Length: 432
Ligand code: IMP
Figure: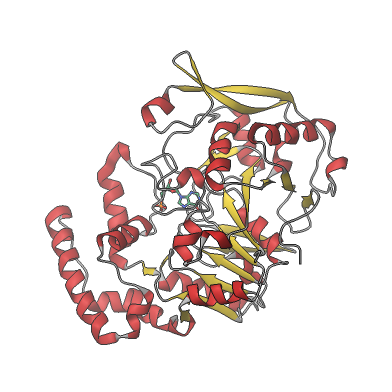
């Protein structure tokens, strides 16, 4: 049986505008699902004149009738998630069908503290995390010292486990960092009270999702962060702690690979990166500043100015292969209007050698200079352009060059934050 499912995956260092694209596609979906990450993500979605900033919740939540799932691969910060839900409720959006995995891990107050202390202790080697406790929560998951949402269903067992974990953590805080530890009361106040309010949403989401798939539901898998921040396939160690790539869907949800039928990559028309780490096409000049201002490139979660660069076709090719993109969505395309020339890196040059594929080593990356394909820019504002053929000739030429670099067809071009500022090229996946 064929499944009507689509994954929307970031192909850069996050912030590709996946929120806008998933929101656009969610109209046709019945189920919208997140499979990894936590409140480090910041999805901005504009509906009419209203701007919503989501961290844990999938963008589908803005359609209250859709089934929304937070999968087991996520790490959740209960008070933050609760605030997000309340903020939506305050604006009249009450999700009717929200489900949270009983196997997702909890971000505890000591994880946030650890994130801060570890970043400080790294000095110049810092990763530039979002300080949301995401890395330490995943660390505990794999260290088998994590606490999961469903653990709270057995209060007695939970209290015993928490007491044991706090003892370990407090020894660490005192011995390694010379810092005060955490009491059970503090954990209760700062986290558990909120976590209990989330209990009604808990369920075995793998079971729920697979039943939906069995009945033929149209499902949208919404990635957070991006391929170049993937713990395995990104620019390690300057990465996040989960697998944003399409492969993460299977483990992060308990869904078989055979049930993920199509994958759409999302890329900005240029590149941005927030946080430290290699960035071969980075622009530290007036063109970079101009793109930052026009694209309002400041982090949704942390407010940090984003680093800017030309589109990196080498990284994009890496992402296309790892995720198996069938189609591509280009976002923030309107930001490129008004530049004399636009560029795409098609390869790197490293110590006299030409590299076509993204290398693993940071040392090599530092020595890589992009090889650019340069094209004439276009003056015209494209924010209200509704069809591909109506885009300026140079803009069409640029899009064609992107398709050729990775050999993947473009399905969507976003020319502004609103839902209706989206140009669809031909047949869209998830057609209802
Ligand atoms: P962490 O996920 O907070 O541990 O941060 C690790 C790295 O991933 C840092 O470079 C962050 O800036 C980056 N990062 C995490 N989440 C996002 C996101 O949603 N968008 C962009 N960068 C992110």
